[in-house]
Amino acid sequence: MKAILVQIERLFLLSPLIWTLLGIFNVPGGKAVLSRLIPVVVVYCLVRFKGQWRLNLARPEFKRFALLSGLLLLFLTAQHLVRGEPFSFARTLLTVLLYLLVVPWQQFTLFSLTRLCALAGIIVGAGAWYEVAITGFRRAGELAINPIPYATFGAIILLSCLCALLSSSTVNHRDKVLYLLGACGAIAAVILSGTRGIWLGVLVALVSTAIISIPRWKKKAAVFTIIGSILLVGAGAYSLDDRIYTRYQQTQAELKQITGDNLNTSIGIRLQLWERGLDYVGQSPLLGKGTEQYLSQIKMDTEQGKITPIAAPLAHAHFHNQYIDTLVRTGLVGLLLLLAWAALPAKQLFSSHSTLARNISISVLSLMLVAGLTDVPFHHTHLVYVYSLLLGVLLLTATPRQKHEHKY
Image 1 (cartoon, rainbow, N blue to C red):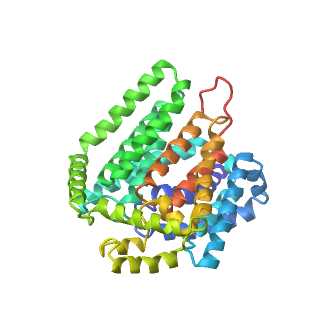
Image 2 (cartoon, rainbow, N blue to C red):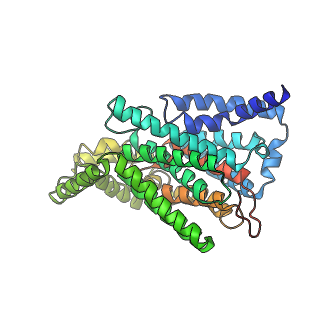
Image 3 (cartoon, helix red, strand yellow):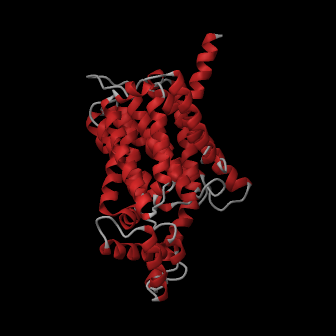
């Protein structure tokens, strides 16, 4: 009976992480459930595991991440109070940081995280197929959120599953099957989302991970990894109709329209937003123009014909580029803080921790950096939850690499 209660408690402790990976991108309103679930778990841990936050902060890697998260949180809070900037990123970061601080992560291993990622891949793939084949949505991801952050999430899960599948020679056959199924499901979600920027991001992330891994590979492992990855991605692309080719044709058509001065295509609208954003950055590069000021400027620019009436309303949400959007809102200071926060876990895990933790952190960071060229991944709090939880848990569960050790 005691063993059963222990397992129930462990499941409860992981419930916010489980729901983040399995629920919020598949269930409409799933994020609201998470925002209520985390405080319950945090209060329970504060009562049940007093002083656990000291043990977690005793891990130097996580302590640095927590301190930088706190600095970013203070900056965003000041921006909100002084300039009226949105508080959603800061609120999400605070919630995640509290959860990471108080849970006894020593009870869990890196296997717990990677197996959850595999289950997430299976579920998100099934959900993507249901949306497109059964409910008739044109692109997967429209049911619970929207296709772009949905595709980014699918890509994060895909990379995590591939890293788990290929980073260790000690994975048993049952787990290999689980990771393979998770990767296949995630590929389905990414392709059925029809999101071109994320397709490119996945390729860049795979190449980045391969480059840092090659010096440590044996020849057999290198051949297996390269061939396996090509077959996996190729099989996923081939089996999911002509969606990739259709998007390729659409891209060609949009480029032709742009050369004909039609900027109201998907690509053309992005070009207009980037041009306006860069102009605003030049007006206030250090701390940014601020949301309220640029919104009034967009209205004037529309009247003057500097941006089309179709593109202008989209600027009210964001500039479809993480770097430009952050520079406009919070300036160079805000962008440097955001990039430092995003990159720190990968830097921490690069040389002294397990190959698996290192590869997941670097591949996911590479994906987000590329995704930020055509979208604003950290504008979507769903992705802030996923990224901060995934990287935070990696820092708290990854073990230092021993000499000649290939386990995780």
